[in-house]
Length: 214
Length: 419
Image (cartoon, rainbow over the protein chains, first blue to last red):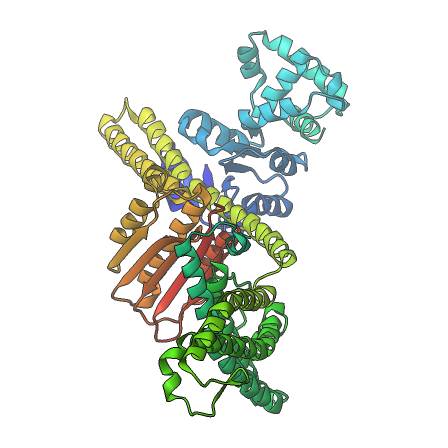
């Protein structure tokens, strides 16, 4: 799998590169700012880009903006954003086009190498990987009103795990229920949110988008 | 104000009263001299300014005139300490960052204190001279009368004393008695003359209450800017420093964990790297904490903290700290930053061979002075010095940077302690 990394701090850029190579990825470019990211993606057409939120020149949200630009140019291009802080606005912006292939993880997660590698693969495959921290912020922010208020507590827990990018199996293990129970909850969530029948990965994204937007 | 309290304090001890009399006398006497200087300066300055001021070549003349008035005003503020017990505070607008003549001229024109300087010296050249003359005449009469018995013999025979011709030596004793009688009046008048002259100085040379409030409002806003900038710096330092190192460390450990079974040797290497990363993260956190409030300053106070700064300075520096009571923490921190920044600038830009630091407490103000023998030309509008000025002004203090090309550079801060 071919990866492009955009991270301004050499220490972390090199570390990430080493870690990904170690796990069998092909790091085709490791760059330090948003413009370099855009041209590296044009040049190499990688399977996924891993991008730091803060990049030069202003060290604010240049990484998110570069990622949005990437996805504007290539619909659904898989991007995994890494950050030292979780900001749900960024996750919402990235997912807003409803095409998936979005990850948003705290940099700390990188140390759980296997989980991190899984997340990279999932995002590259058009799935999601929202940081549990981001998800718990979202849960905290959605107590009152909105379309999500119709969801039961259990359904919300299922939706939160979907946002983290878990499969039905993973969700079943986490909540200690049967996979068919999960499927029922998922179907009920889709129904309550009024999502059209479609391919399931896509609907999962839309459900999470509804949640982020709500 | 403290000065008024000194002037009207009911029970002065006799030595204090003597000192008071001496100070008043010196104030009026030096006032006589200064009024003549003032008269000369404004005659010359205003004549030249009006002659050349309309032409571009006149700009430097006008600027120089204002600078001369300011220099005189600074002397007057210090001189006022003779009558008021403490010098007056100056309150000028900060010089513009744009160093071009027109910009400087505009800034001077828009600073009300500059005009007050001019007004003061117009009035003072008359009042200082008149008051000084009255004072000289009074004392001349008193001393002349009292000592008359001693030199009466040298007077021409038809000389008169208060309209009388003194014919006998006994009569001169009467004159001496009149001199003694007039002495309290003279002393009383002297106090009045000194106090009124000082009141004029206070009125025109010290900032009014409204100006002080306005200035504090401005500096409060500046302080918020400083605090925000400081927070941003700390956040950046954390983000790019310790936090990044800890992430790298976690990554190393994560990879080591993965490799442990298949390649223990390279896993061991990674653990070693992680340990180094942890040490670096600790060092960065320590530096960051020191940048917020140096631990030595917090624990031991200004003297040892400044001595440590001087000892660390790449340019050999001596530090003299004469402060017996610890100033409030914000004042201490600001003083520390003044010294730290000034010494850092000395090392970076001045090419100086030595530097000296003085920290003293005078009239409830902490005075900080850093002097180097370098090439001068420091820019008070630069980020470092500007931040420093904002920091100091936020505490109602003042920062002055005097750094003519060729040096020496003097950075002087005055920080009120609120005692």
